Length: 175
Length: 179
Image 1: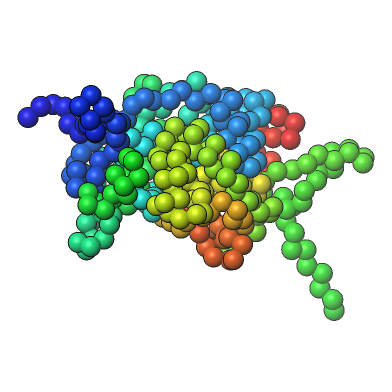
Image 2: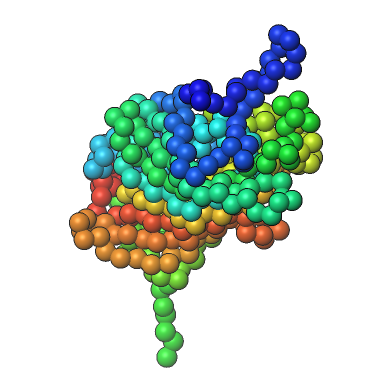
């Protein structure tokens, strides 16, 4: 079997291809590990803007002088910015989702600072197909955030509802 | 005999006098002043606009069609624009006015999310579940907090437990940083 799996295009004409994203529920198997690319470098400016967007008042994230007096010596990147990026970076593989149900756990294992680069990895932990008429199945994934030194900075468990193959709203809507 | 009880702990005050008629604004409650069972209602509420939701999604690099393609989204999910789940979770950071003396956020667990739509307004509240001293960090303590978001119809749409490391009274970088 070829090492290349899951086409990134649907052929809709002789020389016409349309980009497609994501795996159907049936394509996921327990134990699959996905390394999501590209990664993203987070700046202190991003951190400050995240605090503005989420009305975060913790000066640890945006008062550089205050942060310099803490044990970290510089502003700590906000948890929500890390979660936002780690969840955002998995979108291509998990594009066929109906919704995110929630997170079992989000553990911040090591600090992240402006200038660090984050990479997202996800492993399929559990699959629940539900009843055969349901349009989605539950995919439980362990998402791991790594920095440029391959050090784990965040570990989380996430429950997603992914469309089953015969229930995809995508094809009917031009996807 | 009339008992006069002061319910307000020291760090519940908003201003601290640093000289005669000179005040400095305080942010966050000291670890000692948290008690198990306290509930804090965070204000102001927060209304989600369509522009802020789409902007937030783009910043996370998430290009799911329900965000980028509103023709698709309306066909699949109906006329109301849904707020991205990570944005709902992140909006809970609004609780930091009370938890401003945080050293670091250690863990969140049991995060549950129900749909939130553009135009909805969320109000947040937090309950102190437990507190304990940190063995390795004598100047800090560990708080377990349950936070939830209610919409304008008082329905709980997001909730999670959090473990926070918080500075004790007169500890931390505050004096040095001019806080």
